[in-house]
Image (tube, rainbow, N blue to C red; front, side, top):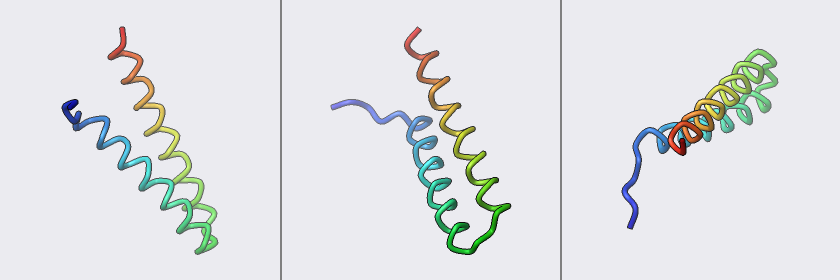
Length: 57
């Protein structure tokens, strides 16, 4: 069984929370919240992919 890595797990949880926040802000019809949550999601996913690429090298 593989060991659970805490940093990728944290990034995954934060990404899911950002997607959930997008849904909440869509329901609340808050354009600012949608934009901020979307940008947060992009940054978190980008950080995860960059980290994964560095770990493979």
